[in-house]
Length: 144
Length: 144
Length: 144
Length: 144
Image (cartoon, rainbow over the protein chains, first blue to last red):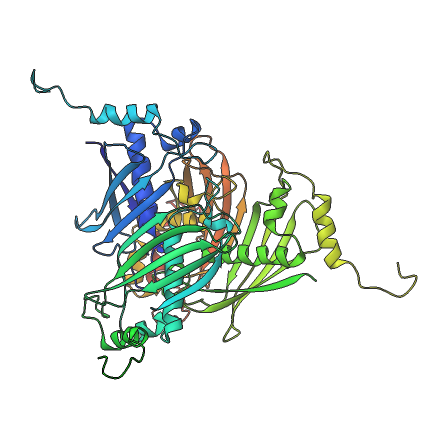
């Protein structure tokens, strides 16, 4: 399972009139989590783009559980779904570092797109990257 | 059916490195659509808050169909689901004004919360507002 | 004098913990004002970029006079300084549509940059555009 | 001299169509620098607000020197001006961590405001906090 955690401190500019973080910011935080997950896996998203591959978001879902407040440190946990089909799916959980309180969960689905903006099949180097991290641990002989 | 359309022109600050509008902005645009829908129904969201009722987002879903680009005028169409249960659900469609191209669809679900941040049952004045717009048109005598 | 006014309604996503619009948003609103000023002058900023010219901000100044609040309609007034030197300067005034209360003033200075990111001299077509709007009104014979 | 450095990694959501960080984000980064400077001085801005004191921005100036790009780590250096008059002034320098390239400089000026939004004189506990960090180091006898 490929999972990574990164932290972020909520600033004034993230908050709104209700005294909590504005709900659209969670998509920015999902992006932070996803970027650090790529980096932890050994290939930054920037390097993927330098290979001419882009991963625009095709779908996003968010469930808000408790408000993040000004100056809270939040932990952004991102996981990639090992089964790459047309696109790749990331799952997220955001919780407060201090109270360990779940603030939001969600996922994003991304297409693979080339420099012309055309949807392409998952590139081999990305499949290899994800497979490497998901490859089954050595099992008993005959197990598969 | 309670539906409303409002427009917005994409600014530089909405775009990103890929030359399209950053995906988190669609949640801001959903908010614009929802606010204008309330206003069109005769009660602004600001007035709802002045009555001590808040509608934080509890869930959001977005499906990105085509990129919005710098300087595009987008049309934000918002609809409210007439069946209010614990919360209220809004549905959205964003399309480009010029090419009539669908850019995104999605929904948000909102809880009803009082000034103390406690989830409450749907307030009567909001149910009445939505019912008024969803009430069946006059029917033949005896029909109901 | 080349001046233009455009309006914007403050959304929840623009506000912060203090119950007013977050101060960074005024730079977005300056951008809106500047873009509509270009359009009113007959050439959108998008068309300028299509000519291979970019106008990144090299300097910005903001003076905050009174808070913009949620759901306020603000008027963004933008003016261009007719004397183009190395760059071009825009001046802004933002006020509330209802109370006619000044909320902020400021300016931005922009360099002219080509597609390679190199600073260039003001392109003739932009000088012509601005001159056209600043050209002295017909004067008495012999005056110039 | 009270100075502090903090870092931030530029995300996709910070960038724009020109492939660089959108200029309004620098005000968010100034805020990050200011908040960490307060924390380093021993009193977070959140605690200041809990004492009923708010420091809204009354003026801001930004000079953009070089673009910050996607995935760059930037260093935000913030300094407070020891001479508190009606308000307090912070100065900033943002540079790229890797190339040590100056990206922007600027300042913000803040009023002191109470819970009613009224401008007040600088509170004693804030003056004391800043004085403590600016007090002259012990000097040779007779030096002053």
